[in-house]
Image (cartoon, rainbow, N blue to C red; front, side, top):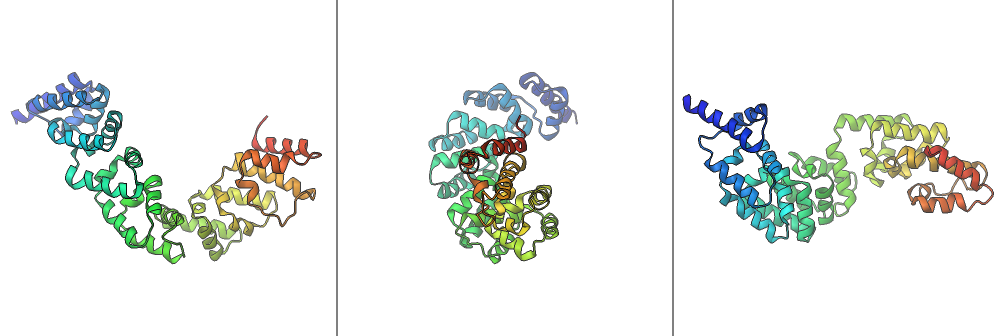
Length: 339
């Protein structure tokens, strides 16, 4: 009991005096790890300093992973050397270790090297692989990753689609049950070799069923059938990642304020992803004005005015109408909220 109390007191005082912990944070850390002598702690702190870590970065690592103070520097060094051999800079390694210290306890042979090799297959360069790892340090610690990547590859999912998941929502690759959404996306007719398959999988996996059904109900209230919703999702799966409120607000604008057919939105579902105030509203009211003056045919393509750049939109739908230019500019900037 005395030894336990003594080691607890030593750990707390060490964290306060050597790493600048507050008494409370030192107490919290000591509940997760404590030591009887400061020898190993001194070695690991000296090791980090030698390899470019600042005092605050070392303190941050210890706060997240107190047991690192008893780690053997000789077991950590090869991990740094491996990353350096792939082109990682000292700053890259420091950032990775600081953001997710669990990496320091990950097995070089069983986790780091095979995970890096698997990722490099998809990114095809050390620079791109290291950039992804810097963004998601947990990649080295997730045991489900290799299994899920193999599942996707076996299902015919292309390298580019898997790479898209790595870059945008790597948590999908950490899923405990990925087969079901993969099968659902396949049944919807998405081609596994396309990046669109990855986007659809992301939507299916990240949106809980109750929320998905709520979004479908909103679209139904505006006249979309279940099949219309499926068709829109197949055209652009990102549409279902928009919030319920965003979907409803776009529909209100489109139908109630502009008087346009809600079904026409099913042909351009990517519109739900654009900023309502800064892009959709000002451009929509410019188009409405042009239609009301007979300067644009009601059967003309509705998608182009929304996806082109602002400069191109102005050239094609504002500046080219000499007589109406002043009024079109006024509509655009007022709707955009510009003075």
